[in-house]
Length: 571
Image (cartoon, rainbow, N blue to C red; front, side, top):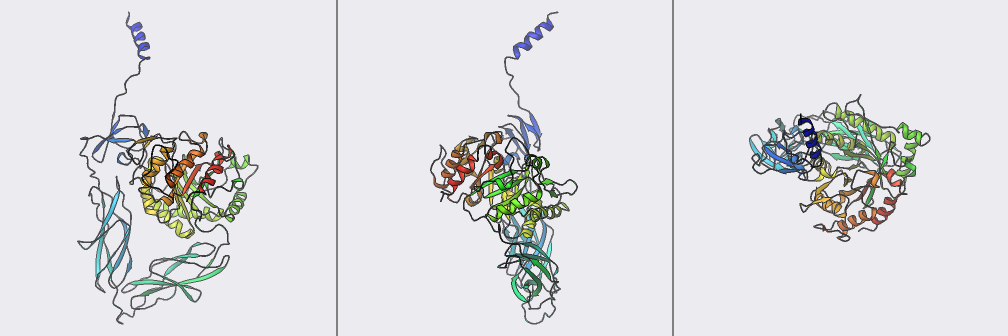
């Protein structure tokens, strides 16, 4: 009869004492799982223990994020036994009488691909870290077979790529009299105010095509070995005609391709940012607690304006759409697409860059399949860029990404837009904790065309700095120690500090604009540091970014008015 009252008393007593949470064995690691402190999971034959609670995402595999996971010694072999995937789409991109050039698409790996071995027949010919290789010392008019194998830091080797055959050209001694076929499908893939970019499909030849001559009218403009060319030094708002002729080692010329016409754009807004230290801000195409803004009202301190965000098109796999949000339009008294286009062109005429972002906290794109998704993305995004008169795109994907497909898509988009294409990225702090994360893979694939990576140093909790210590967000040490970590892998001229404009703009990590300046000064000159001292000075540090311009407006642009003038004083 006393059991029920006793249980009630025990329950009341226990409510005053916290129960110790026991660790759970969660089995193999998986994305989109909520992990608690001391949980364990296995990955690539190793066991890891959670040291910070989190919900996992693709790219946050335990070896990639030591701020979240700790390797359990003796908990699984301690070695990486997972091999990379096979290199895809191995192609012959060039031949001469003594060499063959190959290119391929990147392999993926659970930790990271470190390089590729290129085999000529069954013999290793060359080892490279990039996605192309030239094999030299070959015999003229001879057929060779090639394959490529990817490898990782643990020595795991991928399956071999498909084998391709290539025949070196002759020595040009006058015996080859067969001309290549005409290049086909000549198209205009990009224009600026001073240049036109062309692309075409390859010609064929009995021995081998060695290059292409691109004609502007009847004059030779440029000679190339690939399947695209950019003709520069043109006059704005002018129409030009182009054709392409293929050639081989013996000097035989193909018939000309069909002729295409292209009109250069007007002046204003073209080119890469010329300001050494940039301030980037996001313009919100939606309504929340921040100030609602027309782009024309953005202050002059912002060098790059990022429209947030393009929308995924569910009816067009991989495709995106963009238009002024209806609620924002109404709140601004009928702000239309035409108004936004005019505002963008006015900003570009002032020398500002205006780009559009993909992703965000809730957004994503569908590039899980290469076909037709990549083509749909490129065509739809190019349509948005040309309609609104934009300079490029920002990658702010926070829910995983298909690195090979996104790399391919951005390369194709850049080819369409031209050399003035602006590419920025906004990875979360955890995405830059080591050189093998998905964002670092994307950067390594695209660093030759990347303008700036603005790391989101907020909503992060405690993260590891370059010295291996865990630093809390919202401090100058957090900004400098984590930037110093990333600067091992990212060029200073391509790295920016991303911060919330106000405490209301993020869940955590806000610092005052003065602290932002201190962090920039510490990184650039070694002055104004906290307890953490960077291992070097980085005078080329690219600048700062804020989420968002709209939140900055709620404080009468305290961040822009403080940080941009300071950026102008840096070396």
